[in-house]
Amino acid sequence: MLHGKTILLIIGGGIAAFKSLDLIRRMRDEGARVVPVLTKTAEEFVTPLSVSALSAEKTYRDLFDLTDEAEMGHIELSRAADLIVVAPATADLIGKMANGLANDLASTLLMATDKRVLIAPSMNVRMWHHPACQRNVATLKSDGVLCVGPDEGNMACGEFGLGRMAEVPDIIAATSAALSDGPLKGKHVLVTSGPTHELIDPVRYIANRSSGAQGTAIASALRDLGAEVTFVTGPADVPPPAGVTVVAVETAREMKEAVEAALPADAAVFAAAVADWRVASQSGSKIKKKDGALPVLEFAENPDILASVSQMEKGRPPLVVGFAAETDQVLEHATAKRLRKGCDWIVANDVSPETGIMGGAENAVTLISEVGAEVWQRMGKTDVARKLALRIADEIA
Ligand code: CTP
Image (cartoon, rainbow, N blue to C red; front, side):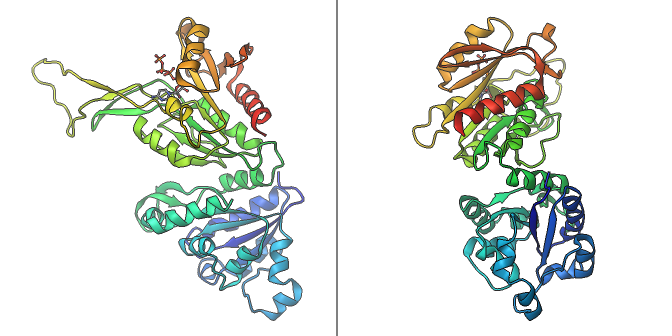
C-alpha cells in the first residue's frame, strides 16, 4: 500500500514510542522507506540504535548536527518525504505545531514542510481533554493536519480514557489513505453508525437493533477512496474501522453533539439507528421490583440528527445522506422521509424479519434522490458500501 513512498517519521517523547518501532517495521513491510527523527525526550524511550536497525536509515536527532546537515539539511529532509507522520504526537509536539514553534529538529521540520502531516496523538487522558490541547488539535485540523486516534483504554499511568496512541494497523491505514490519490482525497466525510443506548436507570437501557456493520463498511469504503472520515458511533457489535477518526457516543443527544462538533464536512452519511425516544426521567439508581407493581416509563423525543443537519442554514454539508430502515411500504415511507427530513439522498431498505438483513451480511437497498428511486440488487454490505462511496465521490469530488 505504501510502495515507493518516503515517510518521515517523527517519534515524540511518550511511552507509546515503543509502538513506533513496530510502526517502522510495518511501514517497511508495506513498501515504504521510513526516515526516522527522534526528539530528545523520545530517546528516553527508544534508542537511536534500535530505530536505525529497524528502519535501515540514519536516525536524525539534532538540529545543529553538522554531520546531519552535511548529509541532508533539515529543509531537505522534510521536502524529500511524501508524508510526515508524527507518532507518538505528544501534547508538547502538538502545542508546538499549533503555535508555530521551531526550537528543535522535529518542530523545525514540521514548520519547514509543505507536505501533508499525519499525527497520532498520545498522552494522558486529562492532558488530551485539557482545553489547551483540544484548542491546539482543532487548530491543526483546520490547518489541514490529519489525525488518527487517540484511542480509549488503559493507560501506562494507570488511568483509563482517551489518549492512547492509535494501534499500528490504524496508523498504517491512515497513512495509506493520506497518500492515496483516491477521488475523495482532501474531502472530509462524516458517518454516524450503530445504535444509541438510552438509559432507563444505571443498568437498563432501550435501544434500536443495529450491529453497526453497514455504517462501518461505509466508513471503510470512504476511507479507501481517500476521504478523511469522522466516524461517530454508538455502542456497536462490530469494531470501528482503522484509519478513521472514531468518536464513541452512547445516547442520541451525545451523538448530535459529536456530529455538530465534527462539522464542517463535504458529505455526511447518517447510518446510525438512533433511538427515537429516551426515558423522560432517568432514574439515578436501579429501579427495584416492588410486589409485582410494574414500572411506568414516560418517554421524551430525541432530537432528529439527520433532520437538523439537513436543515442547517449555515454550514450544511453539500451532500446529506440518510437511511430508512422500513418493514412495509418501503418506497413510499422512504420517499416521504427524504422530503420530511430534507436530506439529499435516502438509502432505503426492507428490514422485515424474513429478509434476514438485520444483523446479516447482505443488504438490498434503493437509493432515493431528487431524480427518483434506483433499485440496487441484493449484495454484501461491503459491496453496498463501496457502491455508495463511489456515488458519493461522483457527487462531491
Ligand atoms: N435519524 C437521526 N436522528 C434520529 C432518528 C433518526 O439522525 N433521532 C436518522 C437515521 O440515522 C437515519 C434516518 O434518520 O438516517 C432515518 O431514521 P428513521 O428512524 O427511519 O426515521 P424516523 O424519523 O424515526 O421515522 P419512523 O417514523 O419511520 O421511525
